[in-house]
Structures are given as structure tokens and as C-alpha cells.
Image (cartoon, rainbow, N blue to C red):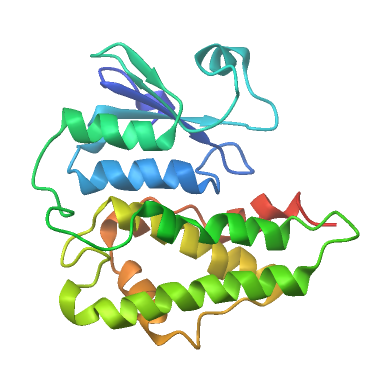
Length: 233
């Protein structure tokens, strides 16, 4: 996707969290989800102008687009729509660029099943409260990882592919892969969370690291650690 200074002639303006240096992609998993999903749909990079937003010092021009100040924000200049919810953005892009749906015939868990690891990670890492029970929160996160691992293990013969819905990357993967990376990098750094004991989950993430749609839209690992640092004591 094109950076801001190359933005002329594009259909979409996509506002995402800036990295700590203000010049690259930050750690927001919702921004990652939208960018990854656009690639999954086969939308050309030159359709997008990506604008990096300093979420600690949001410019007035951005706040006019989304008074809540959250990222991502997608502006479709063709349909004259401004969207400020990542799920709505995914739906809009899917409607504008319809094609073969990898979820056609899929009967497994929905996005919330895979997405819940992020709030559980948040419960673990947002520990400024002195009464915070980190061991309990860590156990709850590990238990959820176990549930997902068991599902992946049990469904492996039915899925017949490297991804959650089978052979092709779907919206489910766009939700889960960025969040799992947060768990592994930030959870591993701050609370020694690991998925080494979860063979199916580890295999899934190994496959993710060969997935162009995922790796080409990742921020650097250091941004994940810096992004969660403000929640620490």
C-alpha cells in the first residue's frame, strides 16, 4: 500500500496507527486486519494511500474524520463513505471487490472465537492496578489458546489446508494471525507466554509466517513491545 506522500490518484485513504518513529506502521491489530484483508481480496496496493496517525498526538484533520480518535479509518472516495470500524471496513471492501469466498461452505467457529485472545492478552498485560492477578489472567489466556489449539487439531483433516477455513486465507485468518502475533511477541516478552506446547497452534503460526498477505502487512516486532509498554507498571 502506498504511503502518504505517494497518495495521488488512489481510491482509498486508510488511516492507521503510526510506529514510534512516526514514519512506519504501528502495532494496532485492527489496522493489520484491514490491510491484510485488502490483500486477501486481491485489491491492488495502488488503490490505497496509507496515512500514519500519531495516536498520542492526533491531528485535527484526523479527528474531523473520526471524533472518537480510533484507528483504523477508511475513506472511500468513490462511494464517499468514511468508516471507523474495522469489521465494517472489511464488509465494505468485500462488497466492493466481490470474488470467490474462502468461507463458502465453512461451518467452523466465527471471528469471535479466534479474536478473544486479544482481550485476554489485554487482561494480562494491562496490570497497573495493584490488585491485578496476573497468574489468573495468564491461566485464562493459556486456556483459550488450548481451546483454539484443540479445535485446530481436531479439524485438521476437514480443513485440508494451512488456514482456518482451508487452503485459502480468509477473513478469519486476518482477524486471528495479527492477534496471535501480539500474544507471542508482547505476551512472550512481558509474561513469558509461549505456544510451544500447542503443536497445532504452532504449526498454524509457522504457516502464517509463509503467508504473504500476513507478513507483508506486519509491523516490526519492537513496535508490539513498545505498544504494550504504556500499559505496564
